[in-house]
Length: 102
View 1 (cartoon, rainbow, N blue to C red):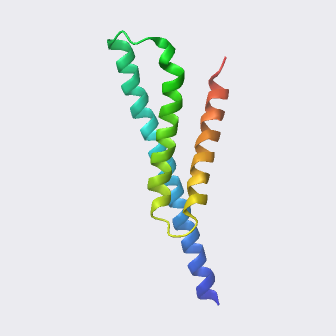
View 2 (cartoon, rainbow, N blue to C red):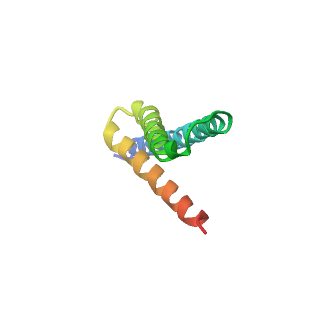
View 3 (cartoon, rainbow, N blue to C red):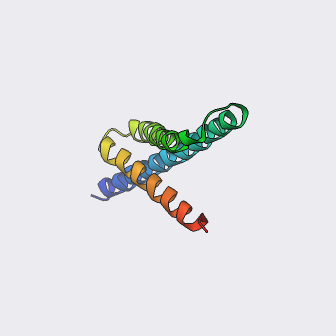
């Protein structure tokens, strides 16, 4: 009986590590894409009215990349783990933007 509970703890820890890995990948993807977009805005005549839609697209791509990689290797409850990655990502973005506003 003790072996089964130890196996569950190991499985839960590995799932948490994979979720954390997905979050890190999502944030790295966001940073890279935002830097690329900032460079495009700086060195071209692209209108600034594209900022809103591009930010939404970057957020979606980042969540997709993070959830796919983070939850892709989990054999059970992959969609739930992907949803957790997306929810935590949005929550952290919301909190950081709330803190940094004037």
